[in-house]
Length: 386
Ligand SMILES: NC(=O)c1ccc[n+]([C@@H]2O[C@H](COP(=O)([O-])OP(=O)(O)OC[C@H]3O[C@@H](n4cnc5c(N)ncnc54)[C@H](O)[C@@H]3O)[C@@H](O)[C@H]2O)c1
Image (cartoon, rainbow, N blue to C red; front, side):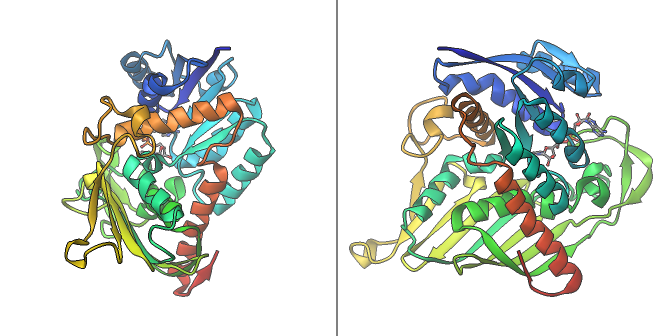
């Protein structure tokens, strides 16, 4: 029997637009049992909501977020600034609608643990948008790790380097406020790097040390209605109250040690996430800069003269590829846009089959615990167990 899922998105900014793209294209690999109705985009900035609704084919634009929550939609995506998560996510959960929340959930472990409790008590599906996990190359690296290709993983490194904040004239949006965003690079982009690291290596058990640095301490205030990284500015300046750079040393439950590097002021690195792992039998690497491939080395295979690191081009044999690639062959590549399609498909299938999503509030809280331990470790110069 075909079920129509009526969809609403709260937040029409950078991430809300990516969700709209995801829902619009999700049908391409959903079974005929699921139909998607693009109902509405809700954002107090009604002009923006209308623009996004028109672009992605949603029927309505709504200024009042509560109006969407109280409507008869089946599923709601929330892509609002972090300071609104603790206010809006409980309302969506209480409405009984299925919820797809952007990462992180909240600004700190207090908010994420309260939200996890509410999600656990809800009968609805509660997913979280750790979109990088849906890049076929990263998903394949995690699969190789689970299948033991690298043996016992003993060490790893992960990074998220971006340059969106490298220009000191860039607007002081909510992202630069500890109160509104929580930590800076550590949470905004670090949430992806830490989640990807845990996805491949396993959960972190201790933050041994953390260095958080704010390099650009003042920025021009954002003009009203500013969204995304390209917000326009006013003449007044204000203080940056969270980190531009975060460097962590971590230990994992399985005994592995790792390092995680996050920067939002990395000139020349517009937007790149990577994970590299080393184990008793081999090593592996994924770097989103070359996101259509991943690398694996297996020790002791064949003639040593010709045994080196393999570059594997992603294709139909790798997770998510067939569901989102425009052409069915290896080498055509998929990018970050397709990752949003894949995550929305996974969410809608979870809703339709009433099964948990692989990235739920539990995974989001686990990631936040690493962030919380990093803040503690940095403030008190000591190792902190999770
Ligand atoms: N998965 C990803 O790759 C990814 C990428 C970007 C952002 N995100 C996450 O998505 C969420 C939203 O980030 P974004 O980049 O889309 O933000 P953004 O600033 O681009 O957009 C935020 C939207 O919220 C709306 N809004 C509603 N009430 C508001 C209020 N009181 N103050 C300010 N804005 C208000 C704004 O009008 C705007 O449309 C964040 O939690 C962020 O971490 C995830």
